Length: 83
Image (cartoon, helix red, strand yellow):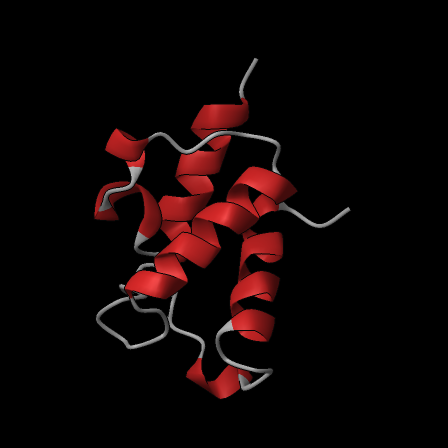
């Protein structure tokens, strides 16, 4: 089974970069500032997180600190899926 960050990276690569791995930002780079996603992409990303990891992203959790880099996304998913 793939790790959380690998699953997120795979989604970003296939959904937003269309397989162009050379455009993949580093784990800490902003997905918005690098142009990988836009506001519509954030909504797609939230839908992916909710479906893939069986969690709910609340409105007040839809902030860059949670969703704007692979590292932030991984940390956010881990915090939402802990027992």
